[in-house]
Length: 366
Image 1 (spheres, rainbow, N blue to C red):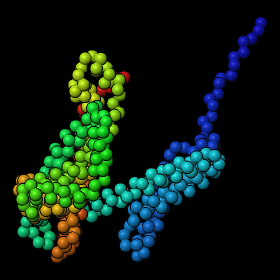
Image 2 (image 1 turned 180 degrees about the vertical axis):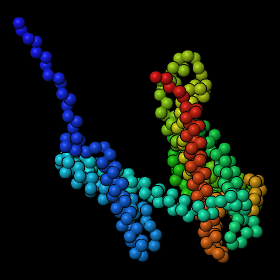
Image 3 (image 1 turned 90 degrees about the horizontal axis):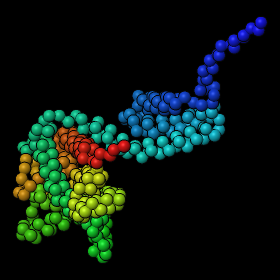
Image 4 (image 1 turned 90 degrees about the vertical axis):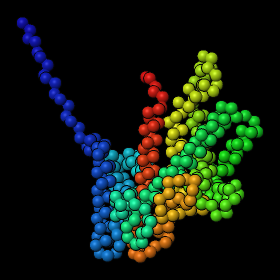
C-alpha cells in the first residue's frame, strides 16, 4: 500500500529591504533635502545671532541648502546604489537645482513684498485715500479704483481689437496685408512703455487742444497700445492650435465660415485665449511711466475716467517711495502695501481666468 506524501507548505518569500537591494526608498531624497535646508538654515541663524548678518537670508538658505543636497544625495546614492544610479540622481538633482534657481527671483520678490507690505495691509489702507494726509495714516483706495477702471477700459479696447486681428490673420489673412499686419504687431510688441504714454499724451493734446491734459481714459489708451500686440500674438497661436479637421467637418455640414469661427474655433480655443488676455493684463497693470505721463497723479478720489487726473497703484507706489516725508517709514510702508495689493490683484485675475477657462472650455468625451 503506497502512502501519499503531501508537499511541504509553501513558505512566504522574505520581504526585501530596498536598502539591501541597492535601491533607495522614495522618501530618502526628500528627507535629505529637508535635512540640508535645516543645516544651512541653522548656519545662517548662527551668523545672524553672531551679528555677521543683519537679517535671516531665506533665499540664500534655500539655495545653498539645495546645493548641499545635490552633493549629499550623490554620495548617499553612490554608497547604496552604485556609480550609474548615482550619476542619474546627480543629473536629476542638477536639473532640480536649475529649476530652483529660476524660481529664486520670484520667491525673493514674494517674500520681500509680503514681509514689508503686511504692516500696512489693513482696513484703513483699503477704505481711505491720501487726501489731506501728511505723515502716518492714509490709504490707497483712490489708487485701487483708478487701477481697476483704467485697466478695465484698456481691456475693453484691446481684447476685441486683438482678437479680431488674430481671427483675420489665421482665418482670412493672405498676401501682403497679412504680412504687413504681422510685421507691425511684432514691432509694437517691443515698443517701450513710455513711448505709448507719450503717444497717448500727444494724441489727446492735439485732438482736444489741451497741452497739459491728464485723465484716466488717456491712460487706458496708452495701456491698450501695449496690450493689443500681446493679445494678437497669444490669440493667434491659440487659434492655430485648433485642428483643421474641426473646420472641415463644420464646412461639410454646410455651416458658413463665420459661424464656424464663432461656434467651433473660438469655443475650442477659449481657454488659451483667456490665458493670453490675462497675460496681457498682467503685462500692463504694473506700468508706471505711461500712466505718470497721461493719467497723472492725485491724492483724492476720482471715479470719472474722462475728467481730471486719476491715481493708479504703480504711480502710488512710485510717488510714496520717491517723495518721502516725515516720518519716512510711513511712506515706505504705504509703498510696500501698494505693491502687495498689486500682486494680489494680479493673482486674483489669473485665478478668475483659470476658472473661466475651465468653465467655458469644450468638454471632451472619452
